[in-house]
Amino acid sequence: MGASSSVSAQAKAPTPEQLIDSLTKQVQLLKQQQQQQQQQHEARLVSELRSDNERLRAQICALEERAAAQLQLQMEAKGLGCDAAAFAASAALSLARRDDARVEEVFKRHMRKKEERGLSQAALVAALQELDAPVLRSSDIVDEDELFRRADTNASGFVDVHE
Image (cartoon, rainbow, N blue to C red; front, side, top):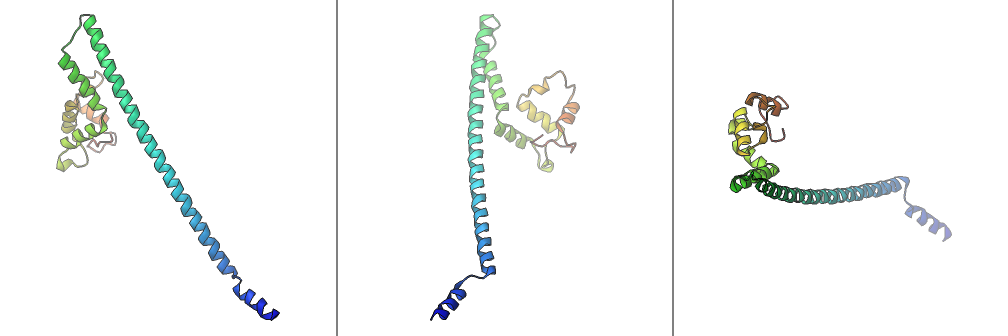
């Protein structure tokens, strides 16, 4: 009887290959769990960064609005008053230029089908005019050709939304 129990114990003992397979599966499982935890952690970080970004954008907009109102009051106090409607329109355009979604929408609207890669020189200037971009009034850019050369950073002949 003692001999048969030792034979059954040996038969039930895992082989080295079975042990290796078992350990390999455990390692794979641990790696998957680790990857999932890393992905969850990264997703939380991205969410937090987006939230912080939105909060900061809101703060910037609030500061710009307060600064615009304060400037308007100072100009009126100095007798330099300007048309309130024109000032409000200028402030609204300034805020719109900081809205990435708005800029992208203007960009896409000015892009023609044959120019799917980006904006031509004329389309870029039209989009910048719609956004009342200060670069069009800047003294360091002489003409539209120079403006386009500066904007077309990859020299593709078109300006894409990320340039």
